[in-house]
Length: 417
Image (cartoon, rainbow, N blue to C red; front, side):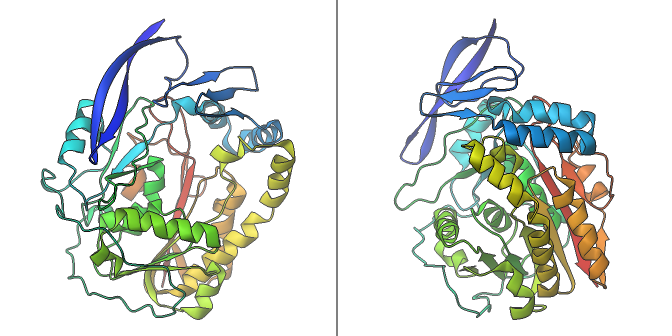
């Protein structure tokens, strides 16, 4: 038996309160996460995540068998460890991205007491927030307008090496144990103080290297975590968040309004368009473009609700690389000469990652890949397990073991000459 401490959280007037509860758990491969009443019951190949607050989660055997065949060939022994992590949701880690537009002093203190540490090197003193007085955001940002003119012109920002440290405001804290804070609730008149996420999802934003005043397109933006991260990292002259699905686009707008103050929302545009059209409708408009492409999300697909749904998704999976390549070509046409495009997915699939980028490079002259090994992988190897580079310019984060369960996440950066 192993004795560990679990922390329960409650909210009062927008502040987080923590109390400590000591419990005894059976020794398992991974600690249970903080979700009250959640446990994992190993049953051979059919591990089940159960919760008193939600339905039982069963692994879809059709999807698992497909992953086993594909990823054993593509990843070798790395798939063994990744498979173990993906089949045990209670060992998944959750990063806490702090919202610089709120008063974070009390929250930082509590997180430090819980053993959270910074994922990224930080500049300056964070004892005071960037903005301590924030009015509720009432600006309606959802528009179908083609007017991409920013509403403000932020001052230029000094370039710092490495370039993803330029703004120094993106702040995410992590914990080696599988601890999960409750999702922040909405309080009238207050912005949410933090955003829970897979910390590997910040890597594409870091690779973009956003600096003040740049015009940025987040082509497949919902549910909005990467857009929030962009606004934490810098004040772009324009952040154009696009989502083709109407329901997800509304969700995106509400997410942004929950984290971003009204004045800054004047530089944000949310549209509901097909990302494949931007290369024609907005050629050469943007300094940076993020294509966080629709993909076969390995974490969620394993827990498909039914056999029929799993089989349908596996059929649709074969069509995804064509869509992904079309989105990436559109992004390269929408970025200005000298600008960069970051392509990312949350799958381990080579067909949706390396193969897509290679196919686009073969058909788009004047585009070159940029190596992210020194800039990102070497700098953050303490926190992430990166697969050996089969194609050096791209990075693949593979969930590995307790304390390094981040991913899957693939990213590649392309520059238009």
